[in-house]
Image (tube, rainbow, N blue to C red):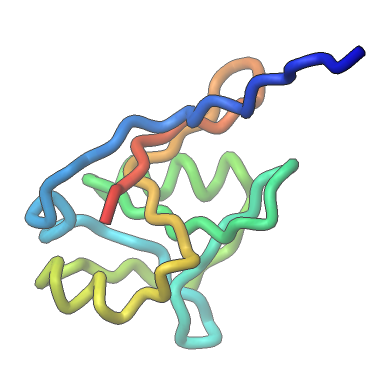
Length: 108
């Protein structure tokens, strides 16, 4: 007897337009690289981008991940071409009261 187990559902929504990343902010590490996040249950690396510095600071403080400075995306196309396709870009991730990570997944 086989049991069907459905695949996990994505928790993020898709943002289809390229222009949405222009002006967004992302954490930059002391190693001169973007700060990537890892999440339990997946081998995927996530690059968080934020629509405000406040959102970035609150989220990074909550997940206790250090960063050296904040960078701004000046050109979406240039930014996207510099990020490997195996890295998921997530917009405005936040932590729920239950400790779950929620975000909008950027679909390239």
